[in-house]
Amino acid sequence: MNPYIPIAGMVVLATVFVLAAIPLSTVIGPARYNRTKYDSFECGLQATPQPTNGGRFSVKYYVTAMLFIMFDIEIVFLYPWAVAFGALDTLAVAAMILFIVTVVVAYYYDLRRGGLDWD
Amino acid sequence: MGIEDHVPSGVLLTTVEAIAGWTRKASFWPLTMGLACCAIEMMQYGGPRHDAGRWGQEVFRASPRQADLMIVSGRVSQKMAPVVRQLWDQMPNPKWCISMGVCASTGGMFNNYAIIQGVDHIVPVDMYVPGCPPRPDMLIDAVFKLREKELQWGPIGADRDKAISEKEAAALEAPALLEQKGLMR
Amino acid sequence: MSEKNSEGRDPKVVGTADNPVAGPEEVTKGELIAEGTGSASELASGPHAHLDRVLVPQTPTEGPVVTVRKGMWGPGHGSGDTSGFSGMTRIIEMPGTATPPFGGWFDDVADRVAELVPHFASRVMIWRGEITFVVLREKLLEVVKALRDDPALRFEVCMSVSGVHYPEMTGSELHAVYDLLSYTHNRRIRLEVTCPDGDAHIPSVVPVYPMANFHERETWDMFGIIFDGHPALTRILMPDDWVGHPQRKDYPLGGIPVEYKGAVVPPPDERRSYQA
Image (cartoon, rainbow over all chains, first blue to last red; front, side):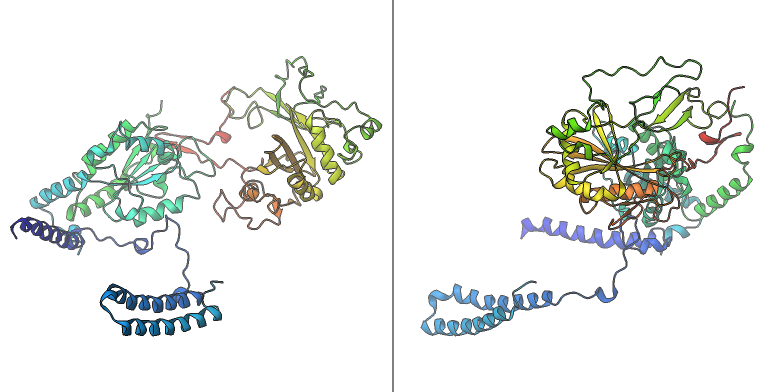
């Protein structure tokens, strides 16, 4: 424990400094309000007006994100199975094959329905 | 909030001013407002020969939120003026402005439709540096004078309110440039 | 002014009114100058068979003298012009038309363009080894397309589009000048298109040379020439709501009087004369 006490001390000191300096500057410093100070910085030009609630965007972004999540979860199941593969029996292989076949059916459906085409 | 603006006057105020002023002048970051040829000299001001890093100014911030000093170097055109003003407004207080070179101070050699005749038409200037372009040494002198006069002894709190009203009264009494006699022989 | 120069598009100093210079300097035969000695039959039979179709028929052979300017600005003596050039007299003129054959590769270019777009130029000027075709406004797009696409011409880039304002040339006050460069043949030519002040429209070359986009915006901003077919003709140098076109000859300098301690100095174009 002994060699780590100075490091812990440094971490505490840095945190204390930050937690003290920021509120202190907010409280002590001058507060002269100016409407432009709250505008976003756009190199001195007026910010381009943003459409309400972000504006409309294409559904392909949503579809891609959904597909990613699903296949990512499949990978989450595959990794521990692969790591422990040496100690597993034939039943585990069969179960995983069943799982993968299910996901492949979904993938084939997606492929033929055009979910993977960007345009 | 904003305690600095509400400090009452007294002996303690002078000490507080000295301390606050010293901390400000020791680390005092400029905003890049290099518009024309004076910007080259401003770059040399940060370069190795005339090293602005010696007094903490080697970081020229591109964002006004992080800058204390706006060095307007170069001629300000009609199209650029609202941009300069917007950036000045977006700088947090306390802030200062140096107008570097004759074009930024008075319009310089360009007395025409396209150039603002001095950036003090749009932002309040604390230090004017003549020259076309001024040498980096002259800019160093300007920054040092600004540090000594404005930053080190900049009034805060009640002193500041007093200084502002005094300056305003003096400006109202002062004769116009045109009425001052005998200076241009 | 009785000496008409057949050369010299740039303003040339002729000296003061009291001591006129001896005469136009002799140009050596080494320079490519207007020769105008070929006859139509000679041209038609030679390797450049279309040179007689370069110019619009009945083009006058002498260029117009645009104006005579005295001093640097203002009416000469008596204005605040203290530059030292207040006694200078300059003749602003267009050189006389160079008639085909022009000499050197100019003939190749002119011949090929005339083959594709007959009678495209109202004037051809050659000065200091550079050729300028004054192209008719209606034929500009065809000419420019031919210049870019034809393998013998291949002027791939339009280096710049500039404007000129000659207020004295009624009927063609505003000119737009296109400098074209050919990388493959290492050649440069210049096209000039004129338009009157009341109808300042010129077809835009942006569909052919997209690089001319900003240049045409600048010419619109500074001179007021409207380029038809330009995708976004807006002000580029002046603020978007500026009124007026600053580089025209009748646009004032716009200076303000400068206040010193005890004196006011007016802007340079409004100062009084400092001579008796």
